[in-house]
Image (cartoon, rainbow over all chains, first blue to last red; front, side):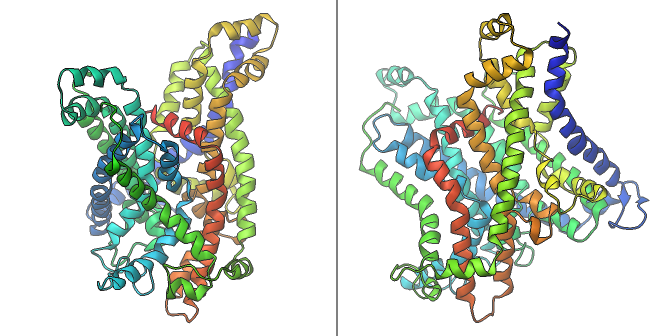
Length: 288
Length: 280
C-alpha cells in the first residue's frame, strides 16, 4: 500500500516544481523588488513604499488606468448585449445552418492576435486604409482611426470586440441551452409574452455565465497589451497606453522596482473589480 | 424563447454578424494574394492574383525560423501540459491524502493570478539563470498550468470509482491505472485540452516578446510583431504598399494553420472553450 500513499504526491510533484520555480519564487521576489529602487544593474536600494507612492501620485499611472477604464466601458457592456443577442438567435432549435453560423462567430477567436492587429493597422490607416477608402466612396471625409486621440481607443476596442465576441456568444449559448424548453412552454401557456419570457426566464438563468464573462473580460481588458503594443504603440499622445502597456514600459525603461509595484497595484485593482462584478451579477437567491 | 421558426429578420441579423466576423480574415487573405500596389489602389476589388507578396516576405522576414521555434515550443510545452496536467488532475480527483485541500487551494489560487504580475520577476529570474534567449525560458514557465489541472480534475472526477478499483483488482499499478484506465476514458476531454493548449501556445505573445530578443529564438508571433514595427517605422517610405503586402502575407500564413485545425475540430474547440467557463 505504500505506493498508493506516495503516488498522489508523485503525480502532483511536476506541477509543484514548476509552480515553485516559476510562480512562488518570482512572486516573492517581485514583492521584495517592489520595495526597492533597482535599474536592472548595480546595487538595489531599499526604498520602502516609495515606488507605490510614486505610482499613486503619478499622472501617467492614473492615465493608464483611465485608458483601461474607458476601454472597459467600450468593450464589456457592448459585448454582453451583443453576445446575449447572438446567443438567443443561435439557441433557436429550428434555426437552419446553425453550425455554420457558430463557426463564423468563433473564427476570430482562433486567429492570432498579433496577425489581426496588423490587419487593423492596414485596414484603419488614415491615408491608404480600407475603411477610409470606403468612406470616401460614399462621400465622407477621412477619419484618423489610429492617429486621433478620439478614435484610437474605439478602434482598438473594436479589435478586441471582433476577436472575442464569438467566445462570449458560445459561453452564453451554453448557459441558454441549459434551460429546459419545457420552462418556456409553460410560460407561454401562462400567457407570458416573449419579451417577458426573455426578462424573467432567460436573463436570470444566464446570469452565472454573464458573471463569468464579465470577470474574465475585466481581467483581459485591464491586462490588454498586444493590441496597443502592435497597433498604436500606446499613442497617439498616450491615448492607448493601457494599464498593461504602461507596466511593460517600466521594463523597457529598466525601472523594475516601480514595475513590480505597478504589477501588485494592478492585481489588487483587478481582484477588486472581479469581486464587485461577481457580487453585482450574483443571482438573488444565492448566498455564500 | 418559445421555439418559433426564425424569420427573415433573424436570419438577416445572423448573416450580417457572420460577415462582420469573417470579412477581416477574408480581406487579409485575399489582399495578400493581390499585387501590392492594388491593396492600396483598389482595396475592395480582386483582379489579378499573385504570390509576389509571399515571395518577398519569405526573402525579407525570418518567418521560417518563427514557425520552427513555435513548433518546437508547441511540441515540448504541449506534451508537458498534456501529460502532467491530467496526472495531477487524477491525483486530486481520485486519491485521499494529507494536504490535498491545501495543495488544491494552491491550484485554485494560481488560477486567479494574472500573468502580468509575474512578467518582470520571471524575466529577472531568467537573466539570473542565464536563460534569456533560450528555449527553456519559452517552454518551462506555464508548462504545467493550474487551469488545465483544474479542468482535468473535473473531467476525471466523473469517472466511476468502480472502474478504477477494477483496474486495481486486475493488479495494475497506480500509474498503470492512470495510463490504461483513466486516459482512454477521458479521451474527448484530452482532445479538447489539446486543441485549447495548441491555440494558447501558438498565439502566446506577452511572455515570448519579453523573454526573447534575438532572431534565432523568436516565436512566430514575435516575428510577426517586429514586422508591424517596420511598417509603422517606414510610414514615409516609397514602398509602403510592398510592406503591407508582406505584412498581410505573413499574417495570412500565420492564421491559416489554426483556422484549418479549428474548422476540422470545431466540436473539440467549443468543448474546450466551455470547459474554461466552469471555473466561473
